[in-house]
Length: 369
Image (cartoon, rainbow, N blue to C red):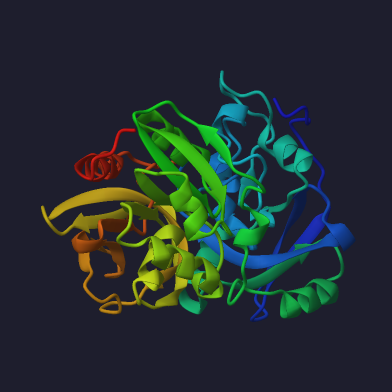
């Protein structure tokens, strides 16, 4: 239970996009500083898993509009958090459920948002909003209870994620260890999700290190493999990180996911670009090129690797919606990566075999220390 009454009187609020499009709604969640919240707005098509979405550090610098009509139905619980706290800047919904109903729930979704200081706006026509973002692309926005002119001004100056290093604000400040598996994996934390750590910890002793950790320091830890995690923002703003990854390529097996995929591609000489509205949801079809089988995948990214930009790389997976590269491998360098989320928190488990492939690659290199 959220502790809120079934009927809640909420103050009127407006959501304004950077291109001037206006939506009416009601204020919810935490009260934003100055009465107005800003961020880059994207939409997520997952039917469930809103807590995992909100706590995914990859959303730093952004606001999330949920296309699913009712959000908050089953409340929240500490087990489903993907990070210690949410890093996103706001939540946009059609209908914010006041009273949760689920045996696992320990706190209502709105109470969760309030506790973490995350503002929200409810009553928004998210169907119209999503259609607009699909046409115009993800863009900065603002919402709040201030006058419409105040909100419009804030939207006009709100930053996008372009060119911004958002990883520095979400990475761990110091290294830590988890897991008891037979291998030793050093995992770069660019905004790593708890579900990823859990999967790695089942197969290895994992040393999670800050994003700024140098290649020499990583190698001094004697890893059987290096993992490159998900994370927020523009990979082009992380040239220093890419250089460090480049110094690891060929010296140790490497597995990258999402931002880690983009950074590995960059380290190998590739380039990235920003998608119009990104891929955010748990139902994206991806074809595995080697078998021609289709996997239903969980995704959360705004940037992608440019086709034919990575010398010597083989494309292993392709998005069937728009043809975006979803996986790369360079067997001579013992490195591979995927754009989507095989750990699936939330989402289907079709691609979890990739963790097994990482273990196989490490074992082939004489791992198990």
